Image 1 (cartoon, one colour):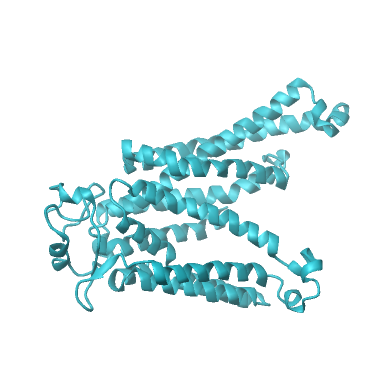
Image 2 (cartoon, one colour):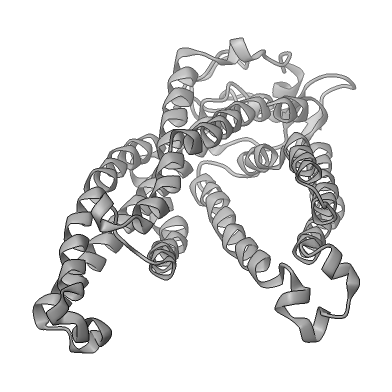
Length: 392
């Protein structure tokens, strides 16, 4: 929240530089830590200095318009998913290299003393490259009115040129109101730029409703993300699926593949045709179905497990290719239903998460308040990520 509001006053680039530098330093400290408290301090420093997500959302909103905003915002969760997959792979492959790859790193005492430095060093390299690119290639998307005054965006949406809905730059908007007033050019808008609004001023009924529903949806997704691996690994006797780690990973990987297609191709078309608010509501409603149906798959999994572990099926259990037709059909039905529900849940999350980013931009009173709005949204999401695991 703090970094978002500060970026509305001093610009996006300085805050992004601070965030990337904080990531770089905290990764190094984490990789060199030998105690829990040092590692905790490194992660805390990372959180305190990281306003990157808020800034990136604001930048995307400022360099896009009504014709391409849906596709631009779709890149945010896509990049997060790609980074999560790649980051997990880097951590797993390069952690403790002295023991994983004794031929290459076994004789290096440094990697024996600091087994997690190598993946952190790789993360630092990526962050350093991002910092260099930001310094030399990223242009400021806000321009200063006067020294010490608020900032205003460089670009405006096409709808601002024709819509009569916004007649004053000081009016509080709703989700359908253009960001800039109709008939007012950029320089005139900058000259009329009001002082930065407080959080209380920003929290209109429309904003409160959007932020409130966002917190509830994020809480549901956080709980669901935490509980599915537990549910899948729990034995069928206790109401779970009885899956091994490999089966859980496969089920999640199949669902993740759908993210790329839905995020880049399906969502932008739906948003253009029906609007962000319709997609947001649709994602909320679709999310209900998997959360209700998934627990009942335990019944099918328990019946299948009983069939293949029955003494007379002992040999069949060892040779899955010789399962009888009924068992094969039951096994296929379990996986088809499981993957279908996880795919539906993935689509619902994309609809809800991407739409809330667009709605947050649309309900901002002006582009000079984008940092504050995105900061408030991100703060709510962060709180749910803390509460979700505790509830689970």
